[in-house]
Image 1 (spheres, rainbow, N blue to C red):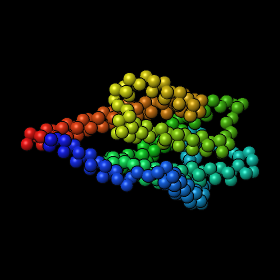
Image 2 (spheres, one colour):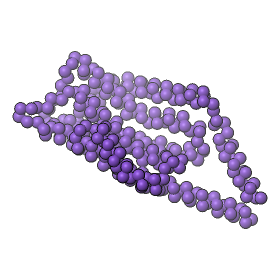
Image 3 (cartoon, helix red, strand yellow):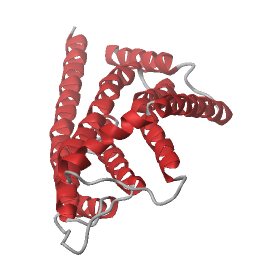
Image 4 (cartoon, rainbow, N blue to C red):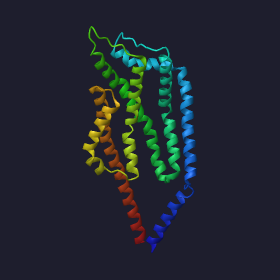
Length: 272
């Protein structure tokens, strides 16, 4: 009888915790629109700010190219190409700087539908998201992009010289930086899915071979057609997949420990 009352009390507490969080579909859509507007305004404001420093951002992005191809100059073949390149650089800077704000808006949209303990568990991932994003961008900037440029430059001959368009190089650099930054969110995404019990260690282990094939296909699709860039993305993604398995195992152990403590508490209460 005491157990029944305790279960009822816990159920009532859960209902109280979620009370007021229910909302009709229209309110969800209004909330989603608000978060999208905040994110868009953030990107636009940051883009205007970054456009002022577009030439500085351009020089920073040019460092790997100068290191890999000493003495080479970039060219532009249309009068408006350099202007639109600066616009793209400003948009890239806005997306890079605004990523934490966009992630925060996503959290603020989903937070009302979470339990209190789930909200607390969500915060570390909110912090880890920009950290992994910067780690992926740094890998491209310091390792993958210089190695890929060395590979491309080595194909020059006495009769064939590499004359790179400024828009093509910066487009490649910005694409790789954003792609690696997003791909490095793999541990965050899989661990969050483990928190809501959608994935588990056994599932990830059984799907390892399929994950490897998927990673190789994705790397071949998103990177330039050279083995350095493809391996530069595929190998870190596989290591992140293995890191995700370790992280998911920790989540499962914490969940099992919490359930064991709860059962022990109920057993102790019933014996009294």
